[in-house]
Amino acid sequence: MARLIRADSVNRLLVEAGHEHSEFVDGDWDPGVRVVQAGRRQVHVFWDGPGEADHLATITGNLRAAGYHVHASQQDRGGRRRLEVTRP
Image (cartoon, rainbow, N blue to C red; front, side):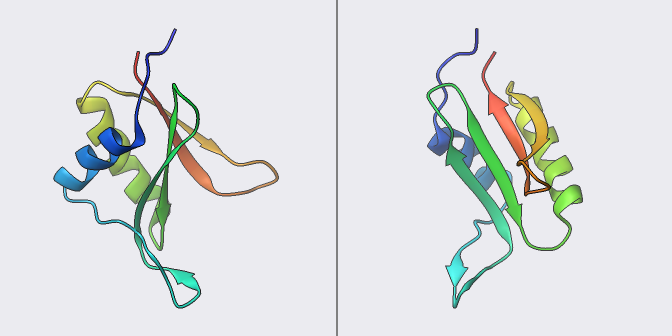
């Protein structure tokens, strides 16, 4: 069973790895990473902006190197790609 995980821990790791946050400015998202708590045992990571697949692959490598379990998924009905992150 997965252990507790906090979005701020994952966010801190990604910032230390050099990823910038996305911000909602003037009705649109600036490119960057966004980390969202998805329950007590899961965090979702999104990339807002161009090069989504490449950035998510790089983020996956950063998270796995830090010991997280990462599963790529997509929201229902062809929605956004995201990473589902847990701690084994």
